[in-house]
Amino acid sequence: MSTGLGTELPQRGLFVWGGLICALFFAWPTFLAMRKAASVRETGPAVGAWVMAAALLVLVVLLPLGLAWFFNRLHIYVSDDAVTGTFGGNVRTQVRFQDVTQVEIGTSGGFGAATNTAVTVSGTDPSGKPVEINASRAFVTTLEPLLEHLDREARTRPEILGDQRAEFEKALAESR
Image 1 (cartoon, rainbow, N blue to C red):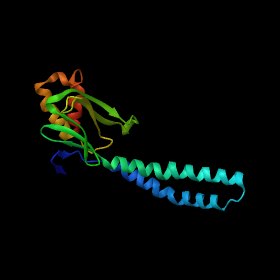
Image 2: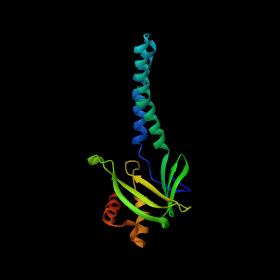
Image 3: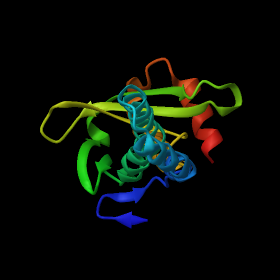
Image 4: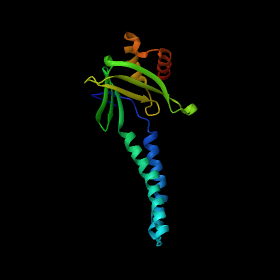
């Protein structure tokens, strides 16, 4: 998708769909626990039943729904001039490529084969305030547009990569 902010790094649906599926899967057992709690007449057991039902509701229904909502609203865009992070359609952070001070390549996940490449772009926003934008393959399907733009910038300003040139080259090659 292309907007005035540039090209969106395509989101993975894992966290959104995972949260929705988890909430849906546990909605019925939670409803049954609440119904059971409503039928308990003794004060002590009733309180315990309601506490358990409320904990189920919060932990396995509302929390996954909240996480799905949150991850669905996070987006990263790459234009010719800047990388922009939005939440709910509103710009949260933006770093122009000319204002990038450091690029870090790392990993996110840490579960062996499930480890994903992560890129942290540090710099200043248009007002001069220091900001960071994190992009990870755990959340987006490709980092290629971002890495391509950072590669062009790093060719003229190699200091933004510091001692991570080899890691950057590897991430760039893997993204193509």
